[in-house]
Amino acid sequence: MTQSVSLLGATTSARDSTRSSARTSAPPTTDQPKMRAEALKAYFGATEVLKGVTLPVASHTVTAIIGPSGCGKSTFIRCLNRMHEVVAGARVAGKVLLDHQDIYAPDVDPVRVRRRVGMVFQKPNPFPTMTIRENVLSGLVLNGLRPKDPGELVERALRQVALWDEVKDVLNRSGTSLSGGQQQRLCIARSLALEPEVLLMDEPCSALDPIATARVEELIHELRERYTIVIVTHNMQQAARVADFTAFFYLGELVEHDRTDVIFTRPSEKKTEDYITGRFG
Amino acid sequence: MTERHWQRKLVDAMVRGLCLVATLAALVPLGLVLYYVTSRGIGGIDRAFFTELPKPVGETGGGMANAFVGTLELVGLACLFGIPPGVLAGVYLAEFGERRFAKLVRFSADVMSGVPSITIGIFVYTLIVLRTKSFSAYAGGVALAVLMLPTVTRTTEELLRLVPESLREAALGLGVPKWRATLSVVLRTAAPGIATGIMLAIARVAGETAPLLFTAFNNAFWPTGLGQPTASLPVQIYTYAVSPYDDWHQKAWAAALLLVGMVLILNVSARLLVRPRVRSR
Ligand SMILES: Nc1ncnc2c1ncn2[C@@H]1O[C@H](COP(=O)(O)OP(=O)(O)OP(=O)(O)O)[C@@H](O)[C@H]1O
Ligand SMILES: [Mg+2]
Image 1 (cartoon, rainbow over the protein chains, first blue to last red):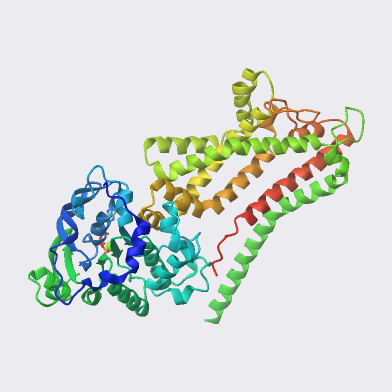
Image 2: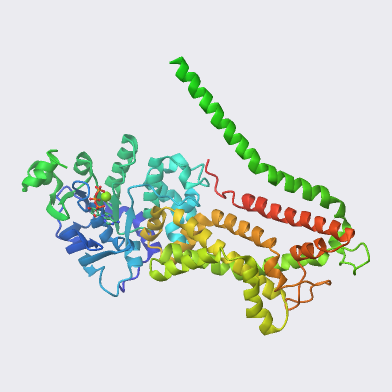
């Protein structure tokens, strides 16, 4: 990938909110996909866990991935930022386009992809040796970048995740001293500080209480104006609340992908209907 | 009901008692060693002991300053030669090595940690002393380093394996290159434990006598260079303890006390050093 990632430049552009009005009341479409998986297959050793998934992810939208446990949701989003191949024996076939460039092309550096496509994991994983402040800056610092105004960056990132007021007096405490929900928001702030173009979230609320969950959902609503978001969730209501599009996976295959209101009111596949009405899964 | 209750109480008291007795039995030898060494050695510790060279046979007085300095020198060299390769090998085993070669390295390290230290002395004697035609601090340092190597390697590997996978993924997910994630996140998280392991390894080799007999040998004078035979506390203790002179016996006890003191300081500082930098509450 020849395109260079100007992390600090991106930080400034995110501050002006001119783009935030881009979202209108018109129903979102996938005409301009930010990412697109094409015939994507993923393997653990010889086991094929994704069996050829083709799915566009529209720019500045939230796409929810739903489906029963073990159907390949995590595997799918891990393929979107080349985290799948980190597991020993894991392999990918097919294409994933990011701004029309295949991130699996041989000349692409996975490290660069991951800077553009950030990830929030199911279990909060702040760095235990770092303070809250250092955790927020860790993406930049570990990449050898010196933010111009670290204090401002930390405050902005923590405000974005509605954590600033809770931690502003204890920024030098360990990141792991926070509650689970706070840790998860810290991890989101850590990803946001790098200003990724796409944010992947793997069941970000599964370890959170209803209040923290509501906060994260609110946050997703706000973030959608600036980022493209893909979120895995087991919670139908959550998908209905936060997502513009919903994709239903079953046994490694994409069964149906449509606007969320369509999926939840008049799905075209019987399987989707059975799943969302709780008949299996 | 109450009878059962009493039975349970009784069993509980008995098992507790047994544990206490076993703990005491394990502590008694340690206490006795400390007591004996202190009571016998304390009389020999004076200013001259730390500042003067040993007197020739037959004369009383003098000290062990050269052996003290020599031990520091040898242990320093051992750290220099032993810690970097040991830590790097441990990193390789834990983070990169899933192949046959890694298994071989791991197996060799385990075998090596069981090799009697005198064997390593002879090995280094053949390898270095015979070639350079001189006993030397280098040779002694190498012998101690070889002795440390398997401990350092395996400790590092095991502690790195304790670092949760989620932290590696957190770092990689932020677009941090693998080498950087390994150094700045994984190794740093495990650093306190590794430092303790290394300190304990140092403490162990600081008291080794056998490998030094063929390598650093002994010297009645101040060390003049790393290529010279070098005195050390363990070898000096050995030489003095087998001599027929009371004054030398007294000095051997004093040196033993000094050695125990050094090892104790190493152990304690290992513990102080590893106290977490970041407060967790
Ligand atoms: N490290 C691994 N090694 C081998 N197989 C794996 C591994 N991780 C996942 N799998 C398999 O891949 C399939 C898809 O797993 P994945 O984690 O993507 O499911 P998921 O849809 O995210 O499930 P959940 O909702 O429980 O998180 C499962 O059948 C699982 O057994
Ligand atoms: Mg999952």
